[in-house]
Image 1 (cartoon, one colour):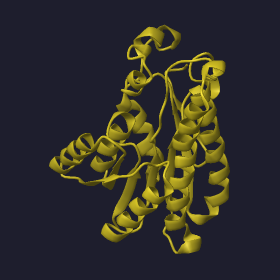
Image 2 (cartoon, helix red, strand yellow; image 1 turned 90 degrees about the horizontal axis):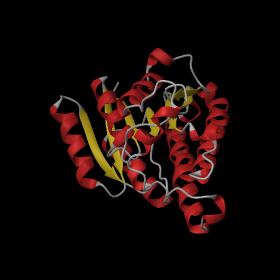
Image 3 (cartoon, rainbow, N blue to C red; image 1 turned 90 degrees about the vertical axis):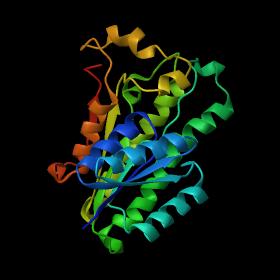
Image 4 (tube, rainbow, N blue to C red; image 1 turned 120 degrees about the vertical axis):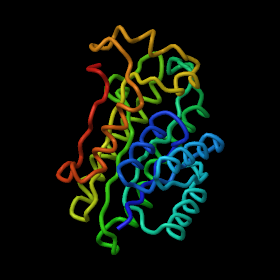
Length: 248
């Protein structure tokens, strides 16, 4: 039976690394993107060139109609989903709470929290044995910020990822008897483009001294944990929050 995986926000960084690794392990991968269509198509071509199966689908995960259309297209073209990686996320420029705008908070929670809830809802509807599904696995990409709080930098991002952690725990308990495992990884300082989008392209290098391993991580290192959680090797693992943070 074909293993179909949706990775949201997959055109770059952790999402792209996860897509490549999952394809190498036999998953048919749906590469979701919002604005970076060229990068998503290039990633699909890379997977296909390596002998894998992939397609790119556009959807803003904070928009219900777009997400519903994406899941419907997966149903029509490939069939029932068996894996979901809630990876799509946004950050903003470093700021104190009293400097942040309402619009910033709306974007932060619409994408990072509501987008994850929305995609998880649609995945559960397809995976749950209650609805005739064959089970599956959901991995939420949280952040070490959920533990650290990110004071004077990304407090709103940390709060959003804290909500993702709580959703992971609750959903894991809710669907454990329906063949669905739900886990999360919490990356620390990882070398990806998200730091540049927050106005701090050198953030990993600048903060590496705070990491017990004295270096930032690579997207591939996070992808290894994600793909393991998706696999049958993690068949008795659910409700886990796995830190991939170099000890930070």
